[in-house]
Length: 68
Image: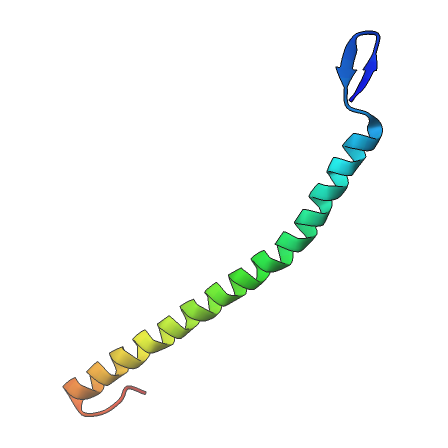
């Protein structure tokens, strides 16, 4: 902290340092978030396919054939 005429405040260097640290943290977090979203989409797609398979097997059990 730098003191001028009894007032206290942050210096330009301190503010730039904080902005740089926030930028570094953001550059690390954004790719991780993207990978997390992709895994979520893949899991949802796998679950949907499993549900479709179950529905088709139930249809086959009821009718004796698969739908076109």
